[in-house]
Image (cartoon, rainbow, N blue to C red; front, side):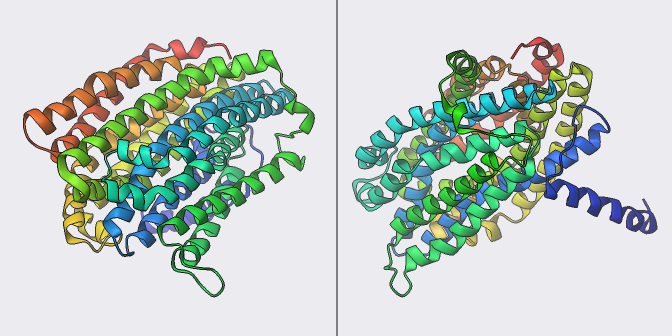
Length: 473
């Protein structure tokens, strides 16, 4: 492509970006597949990038506190525990996305709105028990995760606030899943931007104090993050109920519809299970690093993982466009169009993750130094980041496969893949390398890209078989 031809296409590029960010209604069951994927992918990637910013903002500010290794470890261990809540939220949101997308593809927006509201009702019931448990047993959870007694005591207020206010995490994921299923990805993106801007402003205020606001230190990060996410949820609810979008909610839709609830739970249960399986594996890996390498290795690993998630979540956002395209096009009786959309999305995600891999491999020292000034922690973080990043291209393709199944409502297939990839391979392999071969944390780092590559290969083979095309939702 010549420079002249490139500049000639710039107006079209800016027009597409503007259209995607503005959130104009688009029928994703007709027209250019490439254009549909791009229109969905831009706001979805920005949305997930903002989700990853939450942990990075907390990590940046607490990484410069006194006892920063305790603070970094607490943020990392708490985030690892919160992955259980993320799993529930993502699992329910996947069911909501699949059902809403299918109803939208069938041109029945009222049924889509009713399904979304029932999913919200389910989320409230489930999260209440989790919040209470997490608040009461915060210290015990940190100790279970491998924190020392001193680190656990230091981080108890942080984990209590994060777990106690976890309903905002659940709703932020779930409601955005509803918007994505409807094709309203721009609203989902804007809710995360608003939540993050609030968090970025509030974090230094509550951590370091200003004027009448006292310095809460590490606890301030939890206060700021919970309030920031809460503001994002308020914005979501405004758009759900203002009647200006494809999804038009009504309070009357909160009345339990047991048939609809059973249908959502039927799809959500394996979706939740697939993410719980992955989360439990991550928790085990976190424990293994902490117990084989101590607090410094744990803090370094958490730093690398936060950086990994920062790059990975936009890729997850891009792969979410496959879920919407699959759901809506299966609803419109166009399985071939759905399959082609998945192929294109996988290609784009591989390109993105290949670029990120190079950045991580070449700039590991710069990236990790930005989040910690502890030399020992940074050394572990650099090693972990480089090893984990070696499998980024496979991560990107695998995400698209998983989301394609979930978008079709075939949530059992990725669940089975995760059981094999994480529980039957990753955990035993990591333990073998870390303990039997005495590689310690390095063995854990190596097990991650190896297992993710195997998961991607399994996902691609099962996708090619095409059973997902005939799933009823």
